[in-house]
Image (cartoon, rainbow over all chains, first blue to last red; front, side):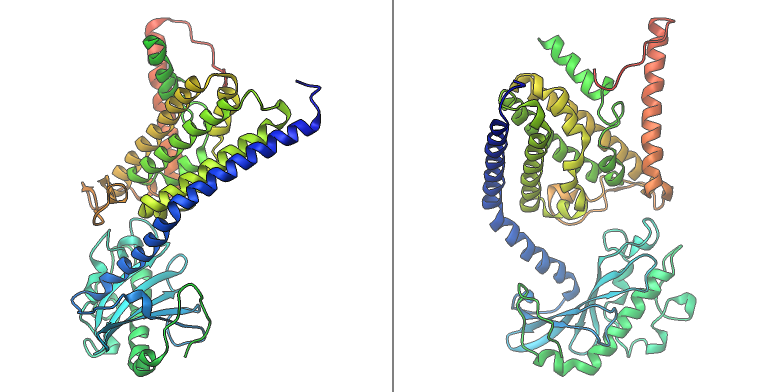
Length: 217
Length: 224
């Protein structure tokens, strides 16, 4: 055993490496279509809640545009907008934006806005807020994010887009005020952007998700 | 044979529990056990990798020269973890998102290399698979217990997000209280919970030993 030549060890290693590689390749072959389908399904599914009550008939994910910074949307990274149509008629726009005003790390938000400027739904996609306090912004933890549905910059007036503690119209969260403030500010900013750029958003050509270009408006 | 089997399970689940006694695989143990479902998910994934890696290491043990055994273990374990990760992504995409980086990090779980080195490289394929099963179950069970404990007292719920495993709409689980002791859900809570679990095990062992004999048992080494 001990005086076995070195090349034999090399061969053993190579054979086992080849075997392991083919094992992984096989697993990848078997799972790749499902993983791809899952990704797409997950995106569609995660966009649905922001569309509550709207009629639309095209796959949402195929109408994406990317707005690269600098832009007037919340956050300093590229924002994504999915446009929702019923037939040829635009119904709503879904914004994926992030805000850095949270307590810990960026908060990624999905904000749905109907053509008349009312919020159709808000969901938190990603955050690192404190568990047990700031994380009540998740729909699986509390109903807090539902309170924005149906509101616009006319109802309430822009000055009242704040938590009650700050003289606004919206509920806060027990033990956390930084997080709600950040989210309300981001929604307000997105509504303002939508109001100013509505026509341009729906005029822009769609982009392919696999090939993220940096073109925007 | 069946007595031997019971003994083996006793060893894996209690006497030589990889997490409680050997203190292996602490990184995933501490990081994912904020909820029961996460603990269960990672526990099952680790169990599967451990059984498969034990089987492969044992099957190839005749051809593995001692000087290259470690790179071969690493190869085998890394490939298996990649396969498990792909399987999770394909069939449990939500759980995969919830466990995040900790599925690929099963590679670094020392419990798996330890069992390859200590057991699988010296025993038959069948015995090695059994060893993977008992040791993996011990680890998974500990993950579930700590997960349930932290979730129950830290968050006031049990089985929240069980939909990650079973599918369907997101569920909040059995809500027993609106608030819990927040610290338990945060990272320090993981250390406290593990410490409590180890202390509880030692206390039970101590009481048993006292009942049997007045003499304290000799301390056990990590790898017998």
